[in-house]
Length: 178
Image (cartoon, rainbow, N blue to C red; front, side, top):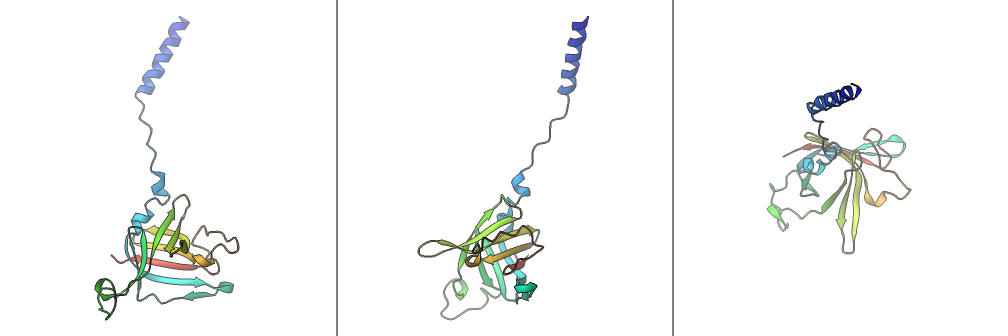
């Protein structure tokens, strides 16, 4: 009798679990942690705000009316708001515009917010031009950065948020242009 009750209990447990719903699949954690940041940054961005934190909390604002950022295939370059519209005599490149430097973007998706480095290639090596953090939300991107030549001299840590801008760091807000 006891064996029959145990067998019946085992069959009941198997029957109940056989019709249980399947567990949820794990979401792509990389997506939630900035895995698509490079894809989201592709295009042309108008610089809507640019500031630099100086000594004793003195904030310097920069004019942003004529500067844009173009990001294509993981390459960052600054462009003029009028690029391609004005022909410059003797200028090189598309539309008579002067050739502008470009920087390879290197992102670290293991960090949140995503850390980035803009690398420039010199004749001898690749060096950091800008280092910082980036966050994209819809048609707005926030960038907190320091020029690469000044980063790490005093064992400086990378910021972990956009709330407190460290001295010597720049804050830039980008708005999607196209």
